[in-house]
Image (cartoon, rainbow, N blue to C red; front, side, top):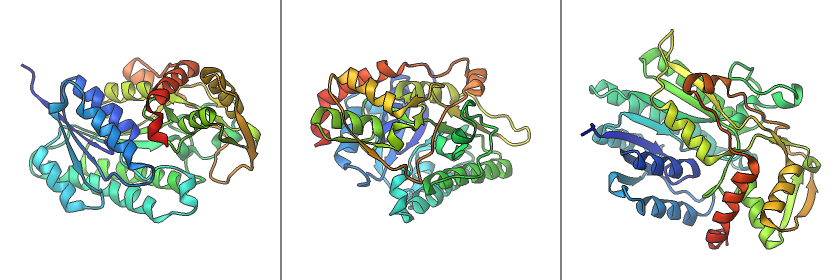
Length: 340
């Protein structure tokens, strides 16, 4: 019998956290999940995700803890009690536009909360239970407007990321730098995951794919910034989870710092007006499009190079957009009551 493996997943009631917890359970892990179940979007969706985890065949190996990352003592106590071998830190204040009017949440969750996770991992090491690998969510938004300035080039992990255009992006870049320093000082192997516009079943209702799917089925307006001339590298949720699963055992080497960064994207940027056309074909609905000015927080283009990921794990995201949107639409039709 294999030795039980325990993973701590922060943000487990979120979009990526929910999908990752199910995959880890299916692969025989013990999963300790935490989330503060805040009301950034409808908490009923988060509870429904938790209910879905509880319905999995191996759900007995899952425990949930309602906890905010600002509660440092409680977070450390949970880590010391459960002794995870792997931590996947996904909890964050998400969304770039929210930061135009609500700044404090980003600092509390993305900076202080992230630092508390690092401190909890160090507390484990100090008591003789070092974490084998800490993986954490970053974002394609750290690249800023590189896509407007180099329209024919994908983003590479070595690109300049010193000019974020949203508070969210700035906090994610700060997390990367703090984690690099932490890994260098204390030797904890850490991997940052730069997600590129994740979509699919159980997605976030504030993100374009699910928001536009809901609008198409209800006849609500679809607001397209810059006349739809913005580009996004949409990446299907199953591909994101596959990448994380493959990276868990891919431990960064201490040469000189055990910290790695990977783009997790589909390598196929899509113009937003084409995205809407594709989604309309999938849903069989006619879009009600309204043009809107280009917001200062919205980057022009995201495009991932996943050469580094492929070199590390022999695989890269590859789900075609139409296939992913078809799965999203099927899920939506079965769960539309959650969207109101």
